[in-house]
Length: 182
Image (cartoon, rainbow, N blue to C red; front, side, top):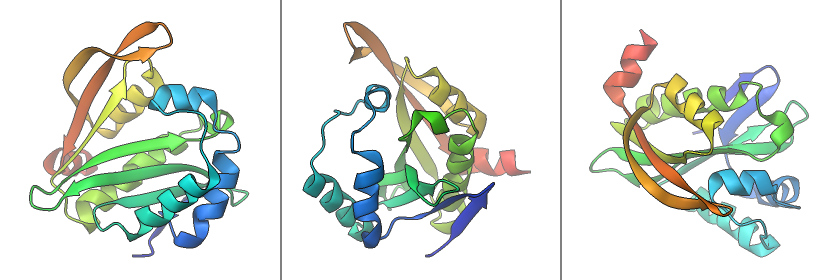
């Protein structure tokens, strides 16, 4: 599958092995501390770890890693369906815009919509689920805008510095997505 989505010079396409070096260089040198905070990641990553990870993702039949490219052609984010359970036709979803200056332009919402289209139309999933931290209101709004419904809250399940935050569970079902498309 070599589908490419485009909007205002931005592109979204499946990752390839040859993207691994640029993926590391553009996004993990250094890894933005705010992105790490909002995604629950650490800030220090090693070259071989990241490059090997992306190459393995490309080979994994239970995930689809889309890369988001800026109008300059640089990798600036990812939109991922992973942990696919083919029997239940469900997957986990995550997205990251690695460069804060690219946030607030609607690119994340656009990537979510296209990844959901791929999930429900191309690979025939029934359910896409995610979890998001309560201290990431921009992501929560983007997920709700795309049609994700709140299913539950794991109260005080994560730390944000010295404070606790909730882990909010959300999902969207194929019929909910189809209804929104009408």
